[in-house]
Image 1 (cartoon, helix red, strand yellow):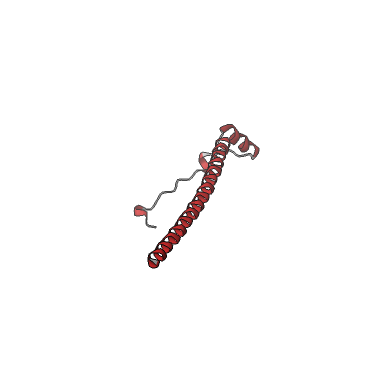
Image 2 (cartoon, rainbow, N blue to C red):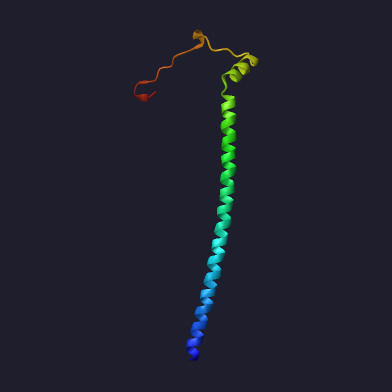
Length: 91
């Protein structure tokens, strides 16, 4: 009878340790998930901000003003050169 009680006690303790270990792992995974979701929201906000900035910078009026401020002009036909590729891409 003592042998069965010892075996049952060991099994009960082992089961208890397994439950505690699983709960701890679940808690750790939940913390990681929460942090990953927070990082995802931050990245989505940053992406939206960058898209807005890209749309703002690609505004034709803004580009034209910047070109005028820098005294830039489109190249003339005389300034344009045509470069032909070698046959078979070998030089």
